[in-house]
Length: 478
Figure: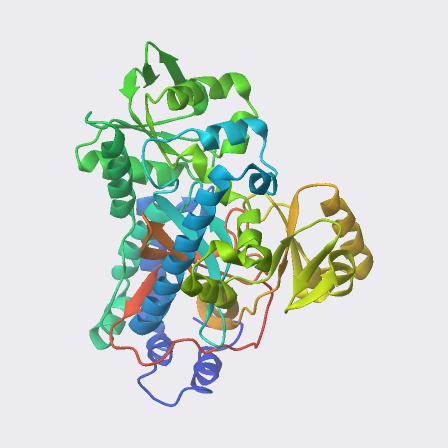
């Protein structure tokens, strides 16, 4: 199996900055030099995904024969950074709840704000969350987004890891390099049950709620099977399937007291009649909703602007300020006026217009890469028009972060070694990291929803002494 860069060339590419034959990336790629092993592994990957319905719409979830590999010490360092940033976001949330002027910075819809101010019945607005970031050549992770509402991919990740565990190449690799996958699906269930126990003694019956016809249905089915294997009745339904009367929320003939909310608040509220049963049940305290509607406060992209803007530095502890400076890129609300950059006062309009290749424009409340404008991918005129449009809407501007590329063996018509970007997105459950979503892509936008990218499971290698990252291109887009 060969194509693109040859296997031998990819091996040399990986060796270039390696000082030891024990480099795990080198070792993994060397195993794939065996055509029989590569062929058997590619077949096992395809068959395993078919059997488990690991698809996003009609596309296989993964086309890479290599997982994301990270040393245990770097995994621990990333987790520590994630948990510190999560703590800072928690402090921000508490201030937002009591500061109406600061909340205005978020551009909340009045109905979103009313739901956010309602006590969900448990302490954390987001019992499960995900920070999306990139690990640079310097080994430092920089987080570009915070998914506070409905972090996806956990069940996909767990199932895909089981497929990878069956690959012949992975079995040979693990015989030489002990490594493990950190599961997440169970932690999601534990987080939901903890939230439910905070407000009710009733036995849980779960509804997984999102719109019909979405490509994520197969993941919902994976969650349903898992929850029911733990003895918890679970239904998958759309918001329009819910009814609420006499203090009971029902779906498909069952009384529901826990909602695993995958539908986003803004999309739900856009359909007032459809949203009414779930919203009423929530406001009247009849159901546990995870994540709560309060999560909207930090799900807005503005949350990172309120972290990185030095006007709000006093909100955070000294360790949190240090982590923000290291791990959160410069982010500001798009508006007219002055701000600071690198300690200097700048006119935001002029700065954005003249630093196109360093900046990204992002809608304050979108997902899946919708509306994101990467300054270095368009010409100056289009950038200026995009900025003017952003001024008239609700946007943030964020500094581009370094994104190295790495060789991955990708199965298309045959195996090709392609230089791909990869993100590193830790899941947090009640503020503690457990597991990671990783996506590889040749696109500057690493997002499966946007049609680019492939999910790969993350394996943590015990006793690793280096970052296990050998970039083949110095920088790429955020």
